[in-house]
Image 1: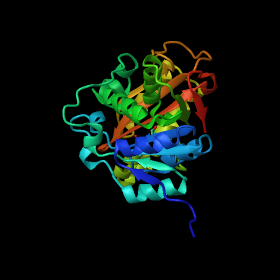
Image 2: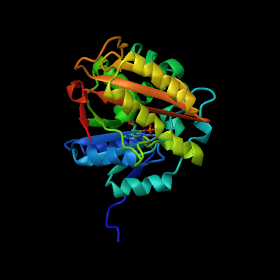
Image 3: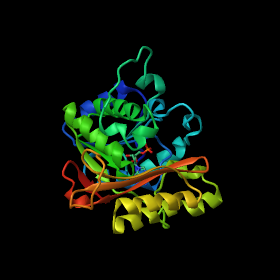
Image 4: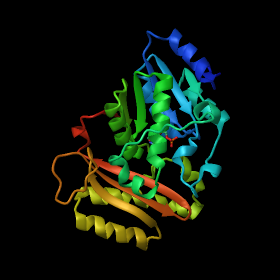
Length: 290
Ligand code: AMP
């Protein structure tokens, strides 16, 4: 018998705000997601559960972060399953607004980070990070959390949100949570379900190649890894090594500064991203939990 309580589900901002008002003196955490919850999301929920008195999960498939030709129309949705995961992870509240609730008629205000969002995924997905910062800013305004939890699988996204929170004086603590992987090393993602069996078998190659580079990172090593990707049937978008704070390119051998080796690649029709962070313990701008 499952004795865990079902989370409250709010679809309206006004309902949520009433609840938040009642919990004024309690610490509140939030994990923003687009649903289709998997073990990566579950880990974020567990970490949050251990740190705050009230835990909030948001589920909203944000159309503004999908470009033309991307997978918005086929993005997996599974509210009933998500509810079970939320219940298992002892989430107190799910905020799952409708499109109109988040983007009402006449919506015309966006949040734009203009430096970190120009490289890596930003260079290949125009408008993506503007969609992300806009919706995350709105969710932070609505949820009013003390802490917000994001996955390091999307390290660039976390760096950009961190910049936004500093620049716009948002009163929230950000926490990064380490990437949860399948037993063969593939980073868990809602998009992995698009992979065919043979693609799925190949997909862990990304992580293994990143690990190889990380053993002795050099620009030459990155160049030869790019070839390896192509030779193994991946259509690589980028493979880059950048320092962690400004995402500027690294031209020399490693220092003890935190840096990011990040890749995005198509495998068939599926776009996969992954990264490894070097000198992670030197990151000062946010806390990182496993
Ligand atoms: P999404 O629903 O894809 O927007 O992801 C919601 C949050 O879960 C983001 O902060 C992601 O970085 C995080 N996340 C997604 N996959 C993983 C994973 N495999 N490990 C840790 N966090 C993840």
